[in-house]
Image 1 (cartoon, rainbow, N blue to C red):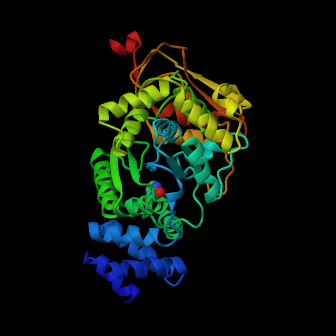
Image 2 (cartoon, rainbow, N blue to C red; image 1 turned 180 degrees about the horizontal axis):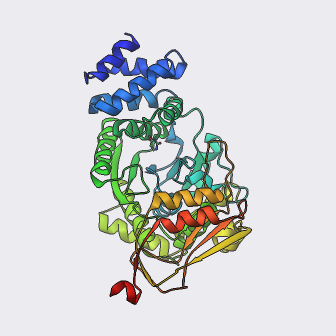
Image 3 (cartoon, protein in one colour; image 1 turned 90 degrees about the horizontal axis):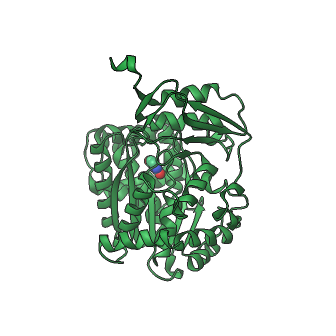
Length: 426
Ligand code: URA
């Protein structure tokens, strides 16, 4: 077996054997196969794809490059929920507590923001004192007590993905459905929960821009999960515009709490209920309709908020934020943008809005940048709303940036308006 033959086979779309894929992944992870040969193979995958059999083999080899957790110390059914990434996506902070309040155990490992997309760990670190780097025993103990815990991914889980992902980022090979599938599913299989629910985001703010691509990724991840012996379901949800009214870390924690307080309905609430209902149904809690009602009651009764309060307490944060969101860190500077004329909001480009928020400090321009937990954007509209001249459109927040000009232009230009002034209508 040698790497040149492997590259040539994929270049000619000849399927690789399982052993060849294991050789490639192990060789690259150990440093025996250099970056230039691996990136050449990755580019061949981008151009020719992989068969299902090869994708399963790649996913398993990446899973087995590090620890596979043993969750048998957690009582009851364990479920993992994963979103492929978007803007304003705080669903894990809402769906996890709902599912836990309905009797499913949710041990979650999450990542940090990537490009214009936010990451759950950055959001949680906006809570003063919240520890995301727990040892496994403490993590499992919190899941047993509260039903739900979120920690950051440890270096011992899927080291192959860590190395391959960095190389993909630097070699223009991120946007391949089998590579995205193997990257996500290897981490899900290493966490090793009984149930895997995948939320594949689709639209301008997501990696998958079209419904066709998103469904292809969703179907492939379901087949790979099933082939690895896990009950897996992948649903496609909209990420054409940011999810909810807030983008930015502390702002999104606040919004998640307000959903669990029952104060916010609309698209964000509906997506969370849909995800929670799917997760509960997959966990054998009843029909989809029954599970949807259970999820709604978990919010209206306050039980889901109780779970989040307990999780935050056990992970070192101040549980009082669940009752008083003003205790979350607040930005030093703000900048309000108003409508310059009567307009209808036709669309919001989520990727551009994510970039505007990143410029305020909510994300990273490079992997070592510091995050400003207070930075972000709050919208006063939903897509389809009509806004009168001079009425507020959105407010930008930051502590590290007092000059809002670049972010303000980017945020304003991310919105597609329809002019409603009389002159525009005549
Ligand atoms: N998220 C991942 O973990 N991997 C990808 O390849 C894309 C999104």
